[in-house]
Length: 331
Image 1 (cartoon, rainbow, N blue to C red):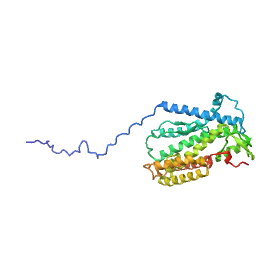
Image 2 (image 1 turned 45 degrees about the horizontal axis):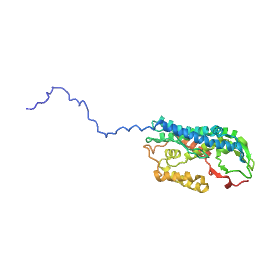
Image 3 (image 1 turned 90 degrees about the horizontal axis):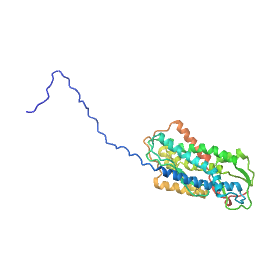
Image 4 (image 1 turned 30 degrees about the horizontal axis):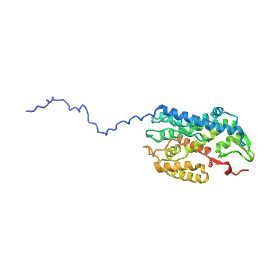
């Protein structure tokens, strides 16, 4: 015969010692992202230092000789040393831009790489910029907004004083009647125009500003800020636009890509950027990756920063960044 526990008279029924819990699916922890070796960052940075310094040497020689050309009095080593006038400021602008993103990622615990610099032996810039890789999804709109806007603000804060320093070192020269070599006209963003006017006042017809390498670095930094602030897809401006507008930002992306295509017909210097944004649209689509809090509006402080981002874009934008001098009407 089986046995059963003895009942104690007067003893109340007790709840079970271990109440049953509702079952939930097991979610395995995300693996730690693989870190890229440090030597890769260092190598790319050193190569970018070399290419930007070499480009800076060409800028310094052009500044030294003026638009009329002449004899090069510098040895290759002397030009490389003087090229630091360009490479140090542009690396500071690009580096601070990416550090703004990186530090914001670290603050919110979002896994991201250190800044990658992109060396490119281009006579004009010596680099294609820099970037970081964000290795995990950004959890919410607030974090997305802060990470997206931190880079442009950090780069802008460095570029503005360098612009005024560069203008102080620049000079006004007469446009040559028969220039030697190929000359380029650089479009002037509103902030650039303001700095030039505050430094030189009105520049008479037939004269122009020949930029010191520091001024050219600041000009390139302003242009890079404007490019990143385009409210398109995965660009900084696209992150800001999505954080403010939610799914409506997809319409903004399509409109801005159409505007870029139109700008490419206005100035061929926009053709590459327009092509890259169209490629981005094809590969990733017009919609920004969604966050869980998509429908929750941002706080007033971040909305004010979004307006500041629009102001930065307007101040740094130029419709014709680079044009050959022979295509520009000369007074």
